[in-house]
Image (spheres, one colour):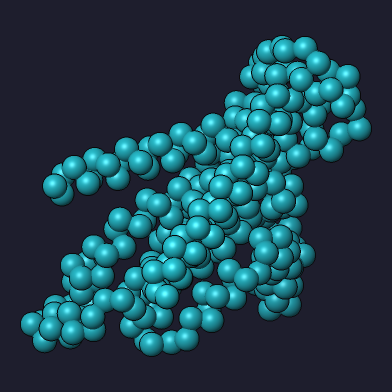
Length: 285
């Protein structure tokens, strides 16, 4: 009975994996064809590289690429640091992890709206500071949304990603025997030493994986950059969304070109992760 259940579970898992991969490959293939000018629904049926030349030759593309990479890298690093602090604080205080679960449940767009209501120049904090006579007017409050530094977008991704990273780290901590920490404490180890030599080695291998996950999500997400990001430069995902939603079909292949570029960036990040993990594995042999 046990063997049959295991075989059935493996079969169902393999079937689900094949289905997911099939959907991904179908979507990627369609995007690739449209980016090369094969879009029969609108009368395009000849292979061409013109759309790639137009996108790569656009002066705003490089600035959008740099802006996207900056937001994704910075927000992912901040998320991991925040997740490390939150998970350690909850683990050592034995507090309930609702503080991590709640941000994970909320969609990114909701988090962005909450941040705007709190930290915008007309938000709650600015009004409180104005009523306390700490600022002269709303314009005196720092502007973190809709500007070229992308602080609002970074903050939104960092808060959501920090909660996710914290949940992963916390589950790892809970699988560590408390006797290890107790023994270290009895030997005079400080809280920092306990974290550095006992807890951190368990999550070190997961940090890069979580970074890759958060990085790829941030660079491919368009909703938050469109809502609270600058109009120039836009992130690549936001630029693709704006091109795709334009009335003219001439812009749609360009949107798919950007999507293909984002997919390539994601694939390269996974390859880098694989090479690093393989190198670490060979060292440990």
